[in-house]
Length: 257
Image 1 (cartoon, helix red, strand yellow):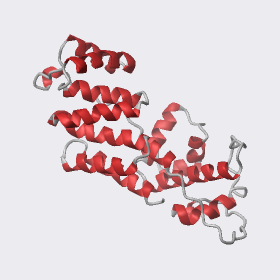
Image 2 (cartoon, rainbow, N blue to C red; image 1 turned 90 degrees about the horizontal axis):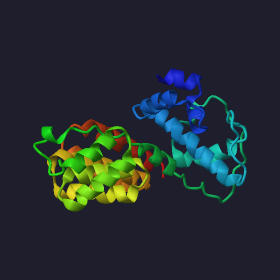
Image 3 (tube, helix red, strand yellow; image 1 turned 30 degrees about the vertical axis):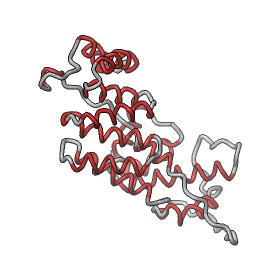
Image 4 (cartoon, rainbow, N blue to C red; image 1 turned 135 degrees about the vertical axis):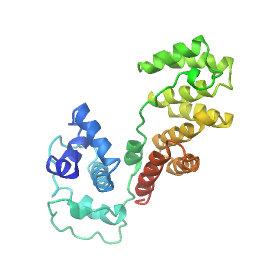
């Protein structure tokens, strides 16, 4: 998928309206996380939709093509605050009379941060290849078997008992944090990932910083996420490139505030 296909197929619009199938949505998300232009266009469209909702409370967004003439007022209010490439959009909205003594409303960057918070389950390497993890007992293996097949609730049940019996099991703490993150419980995810970091296990530490950043983004804590990504980058591990790219995207989002 490239920028031309996204532009001609109006994929950004369809993405916001929830009109993409799973495969097309995944391909689009993979692209815009790597393409600053497409990411910025998506941010602008989401911000405009948010502002329109505030201007017209109680009226749901129309499930169809965006009415750019109707959104002219929204665009005028967002142009300075968002600072993104309005020139990328083809239609030119009708001129809007200036609103005397009114400041443009602040841009809600929360939806963009939540997009960046998307996380895939990291792969699991068996304890026998990790030098004999302290969480390598039967219950741990049961939990990780459930984790591999995406049954995160069952994995949480098993890994919680492992962590209770051995609080110094970095593997149990880390994968508990991941399971909570993937099931939308960011508070619990943060606690487990911070516990992993406190243990200082070098095999889990870089990933713990990276996924803690994801949990913080889900709660719209951009500053906290940036700090964790910087710590992950400083370790120069397998996630360094991915952490740098995510940090760049977070900074682009927060620069529009």
